Length: 492
Image (cartoon, rainbow, N blue to C red; front, side):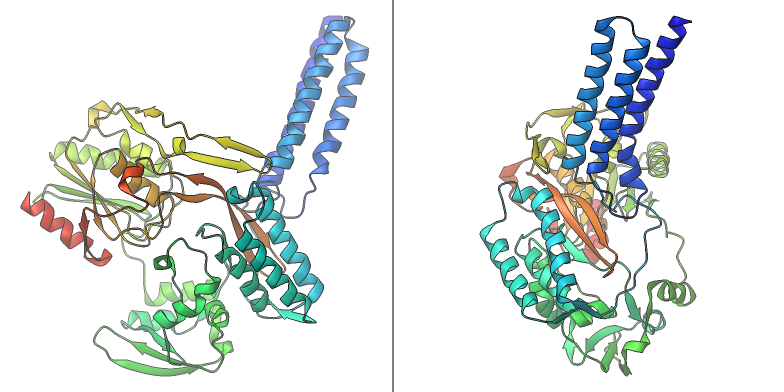
């Protein structure tokens, strides 16, 4: 019976520690509200108290009591330290069923604006990789200017607040650290006009290039080539100071124009807009995020990856493609990453399994990560062992198609191909340097419907001798990359 009690006490102690540890996934994955970090301290104190009580009543030996309590104290202390360091504590990027708040330009009180500004700055100071030693002079100066502007007003419109925050983030020179609306209001005629071959040429005589200039002071980027605007999005019109009524010129490729006038009431929610897209622009057969096609005549396989997502589906597509390539003796492989905004950096590792290499340089081994007061330096430059799929290995030529929209993990994909000497690049240079910040944590400001993303790591290029940016071996406009690819494999 005594042995059974001891076993039960050990199980209960393990369970208590597991419950304390379980607070992390509860907070990061489920809870959509502020969850104070002192909750972890409280849970740890309760855990230690219960273990003390159990050990005192169950274990007869002094050593067993000391070991149980000591292990629990060390474990809970680490949990508390982790809670105060972890950049994903109270973050919202990994949660589902997030609140929806469509963009609106209503007023904030001075105090609401100042409090939210301080919350934004608090996240930057705690987690951004560049601010481990404090804010830079430029960021601090811009913050003080924005705060003084807010303090001089009785009310601040939401777009004024957004301009202020985004002007601060602009000084960081980091495209991953941004303040965006994810629930836009879009022009109701957009899908219908696009189905007729039209796109917005200008709004109130302001063209897309002119709007990019207007938005530049409020944009996060490493190079201005990264700046993009959606002229059908009310948020961008407000951000640039374009006021209703909106005199819109629609233009098609032949230069034909159609003039229409809109007011704010003519903008609809994203859900309504996507429903109209389904009506006027039905999805094509390649609507998936990953698919491939094989041209036997040119001995060419093209893998299209619209987003970087490592999944069973992605692995299945790779296996199917390389199986068919082996059966048809295909000699050329192209990976189309144009317009790919990123995601999981390990998608390239899955592809490497089909290449005849034993080791390769992994971009994760050339970076630093900051978790509040902790900094982890992984800049060791070691090689990663490849888990080769020898049955389906491809020993032909590899090409990567890129444009300026090839971003984040997609740019890393390209870098790992290039810097490991595994292939050539066709298209445009991605508008993001290889030496850049990333690995974001995200926080949702429900009251204003805006998302803050903060970079927690800094990556160095695997081969610094190749420069800061990916430079294509075969430069051409992004939209011409496929044609250029066909010309290259045709010549070979």
